[in-house]
Picture 1: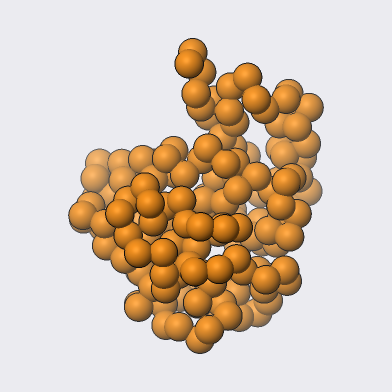
Picture 2: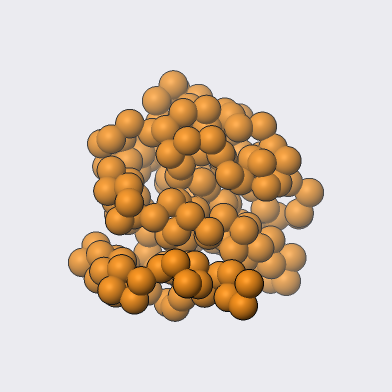
Length: 171
């Protein structure tokens, strides 16, 4: 499966819509994983419980099947951030690599939704689990230089940036 990352605070809706459209239009099997700092945005957006999720997978020994939630879209499974923030260093662990491999098993796509990596450098190791990325920026809030820095961060990590989305334009 291919791994795609979405990086910004306004990205959850975009990632969720992209995941749903991949599942619906391509009849693909898609896993959407939220990496968070604080309460789960995806849980609230989709109407799922906060956990168990990624935190429980990485820190509490939860099993992948128990953390993958259906959301009413055939082929789409969601792993929320969980009930707490993943501690620094956990995303770079061999255990994290194994968890992401298990999540990917049988999937056509893995989409990762995370908060802005520049604001949360402790989450930057997530990039080692991403092949390609779509960057999501907020109109009239994201500075051009910060957008370039994020693109360079991905490039240094070996992540191919496919493009970007400008959210909240014209509001």
